[in-house]
Length: 114
Length: 113
Image (cartoon, rainbow over all chains, first blue to last red; front, side, top):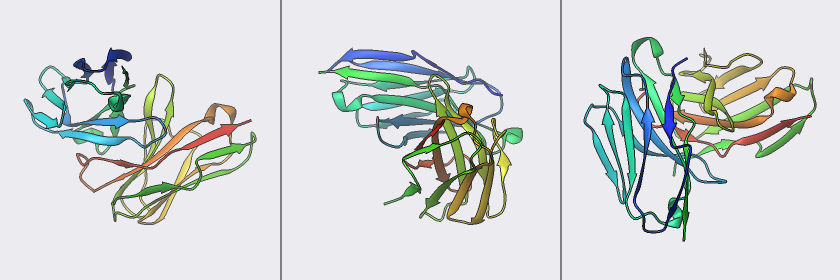
């Protein structure tokens, strides 16, 4: 089974702070990487779909980068707000033999304190 | 507005019971997935289906089976529920290509006593 890791496991920041966290994945057989935000009592929602090495995606105050050669992706949140409090999941999608399987990381739980 | 629905938000069953979890999507998606989520382990894939009557095992299929008789519906079956199947179960769907984002249902929290 593929190993997808996320760090840190949890994070507490003050409102207005900027923060970032990491998703590490196998550098071989890469096909795509997804970031999801999962708020308490809601369903996970996709933030970004990343497929190319060097990809940078942005949605409002949230952005992500991708390095497929070394097997990591960073998620950045600029000026965190309480509504950003959620668990952020990355999902690795492998090519060829891995078919359509998704392998999720364990998530980073972010708490933004007002 | 895209929608994935699951039959129950909370379910309590006894050991040995047969349990059905239903998932319906209204987006005409080819792919459907069942995951379970346990603390510290993230989402783990149980089964997925890429077409009607087609199914593939995920990482943890033991103790589960699935059924996809119609494109919009994907059922997860616990033939004989056990306490170690107490978990949060999430269904998701996506368009055929695997790089497409998945859309998730609200989850079913199953407790097996």
